Length: 208
Image (cartoon, rainbow, N blue to C red; front, side, top):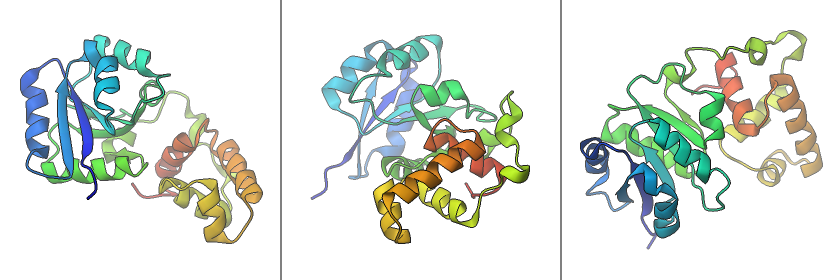
């Protein structure tokens, strides 16, 4: 039997954390654990969560995430925001945020997002991409457009697939995949595979 996915829910407002917990209770798929920001590292070490859900944001929580950044057991993070517009920022990505959802997401929406996040995907509410970053260089296109092969690979990157699996699917070598990934990152002016996928979504090369 597959073990339930441990979801660590972090908030200073107990009622807000409980609201998220209620949406997951009663489903054998999830094991929700509620905690507070000051104890984040201890909670991660104690419970080894598969996902962290931030039921709110605060300077204290930002500091806790920063302290956790280099921790070997750091899981992906989902941020639940009152207003997700323009929320997919470099700061949140550096903090380990891989998913942005509205605070009032339904239980079904939360479950679907957690499943995708658990599978290694980036999960973004459409509004999270509605405001472009200050540096617009990520959106430049022109003669830097992706080739059809590069688009195929970006699609697979969005699925969370590694170079080995991509190579097997396309019947090409891992070296060739690595070459294409390097080209994709350069063309999209992205520093990571995650940032490349997000930029591709914003350009309309992928659907959210």
